[in-house]
Length: 130
Image 1 (cartoon, rainbow, N blue to C red):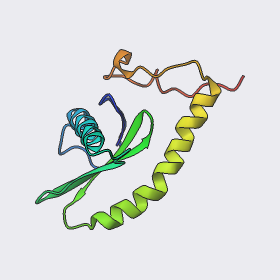
Image 2: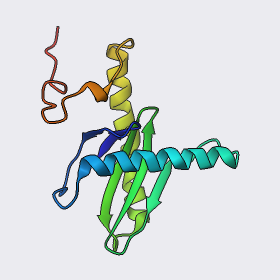
Image 3: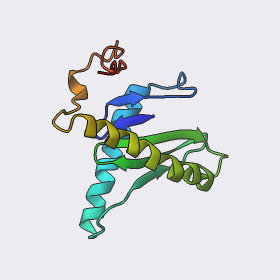
């Protein structure tokens, strides 16, 4: 799942039917924000990920760039090291896409609180080349 740091779900892939992805995104963003707060308390400039290990599932939330996070929910028998390996190669590519979008219109902002969460197709439509 790609989520913004305010907790809004931007996109998701995979089998997400077993849980409420919108709520999970909001909680994960809050957990990441709390972790950043803890980093500040111990004078750590940045913790870039949060890992939660469970009996059945685990999740890893990784900072993509200034506004977004990438969250992976995976079976607990899967090694977190394997997930981090692929996440560490994926996040720079996703960050590059967000930075590319910002360069197209540097004055535009992304305010997902104004988006219709029931139908986001208009918001994420492909813009015709001008």
